[in-house]
Length: 169
Image 1 (spheres, rainbow, N blue to C red):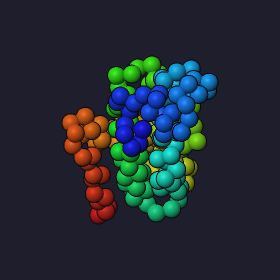
Image 2: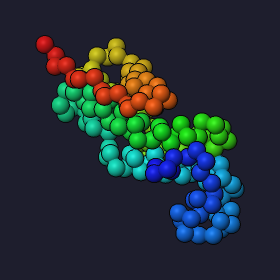
Image 3: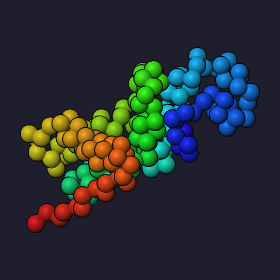
Image 4: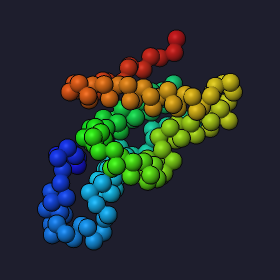
């Protein structure tokens, strides 16, 4: 999936890559859609593993610097795995099976939850306003990642770079 994408990917292609007979895969998977969903899940987990953990530790560096690092991290994640999702856009059954699986990011918690948890921890430390809404902020950051990657992917353009970090005056 990472090398060739998903459009036109067949069970035979997957079996060849796995060096097994075509029919063997059907002994372990209900069909192509389940196989694609599980492969996509593994791909997303692999991307996260390669990038490492969320680059924000409560109480370390500045909140603004950590959030910029999180945005950069989120862009790298989305840039690496969204092309594979795009290849499955015409295969709703495979996507439905993927979405029925546990979230592949953050040990099943997902990027948005990791970000919101980080922000709540910063609130507890007094480094973020008690009036800030961590869920909304996390949604905005993940949404920014989608906005900076998806339109360009669908237009065949390279993904956008994160905006530069601006030091606080």
